[in-house]
Length: 403
Ligand code: GCO
Ligand code: MG
Image 1: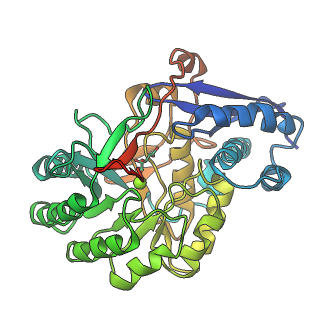
Image 2: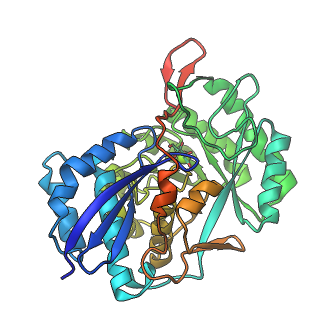
Image 3: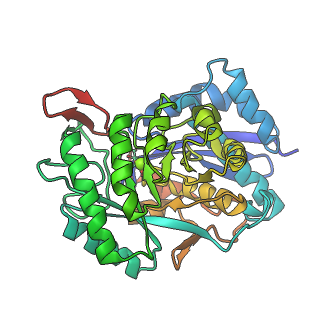
């Protein structure tokens, strides 16, 4: 028994906003969990402070599964990003505590390492093909074996995944949501040209990925997947919005380009049909948005039955705590696929000191007991929360579109 003595939420903005939960036990051990929902941070703060934390005090921190079920079933109002993110933060913090008590890095408790490290992919982007490929070459020179390519679209002022100042891609901004203009036709013409040039310049030894960011209809996505087939992508991500899981059937019928989806999913139910019908190849659910390590393990085990592999979301709005959770989880599951790795800012890394290390294209969680990531609360306080929103997207005629 290791009684939970207290829990608190730390909201800070070291380079961008992060919501972090810290749970302390009566033996003086603490664990941390990420609770960040980009653009809706305060909703999770209120959910945790008003509704979850009062129910945690006095419980046995070791009873991770029971506490998960208590928060999930006990709320009656199941699922959704805010609820599942709050549960996720508790779950991560409790695994951190359990592993610290055991004196082991978390992956050892989850079954031990299945491989030397987690293959990761970097983000290369540019205004045009040339710039994108020269960015990719920089990552390859750093040792990356997989790179996601996102490129400006001729005729569009901006698009998802492309920065104008060559800084780290960070879509959330202060002020009201920025408005972008989108044309699917222009995009569909540009992407195959990018990948044709990429294979010519970068060769075939590097894994290439692309994110469509939920912007196509099923038949448009089928066409893109087919057009990209000759370039042998590692995956095509979020080809269509996935509320309707059946949409992926049409893409599948037309192409062998591997498909990935799931960064906005909250539970195993969001991907049940996609996995069962083998409509996807990679499931991208993240510890923070899909109920923590406890539920990710269930999703991975279920996915393994259908040869679907993992590919956890790892954008910069997921804190180093989520990255650590993903790395321990990834190392311990047999059907690991790849891990997204966008570098956090210097400020973020200082507020969240961590033991994970990049080497030769792989990330390893390190050998520190627990998750191997901490939060410097004093430093966090020096970066106060700033309201920020993700952009919205409109078609050229003004129609609201998926961002
Ligand atoms: C990715 C994602 C991100 C999201 C971001 C939203 O593949 O990394 O699509 O870039 O847009 O996490 O908050
Ligand atoms: Mg994505």
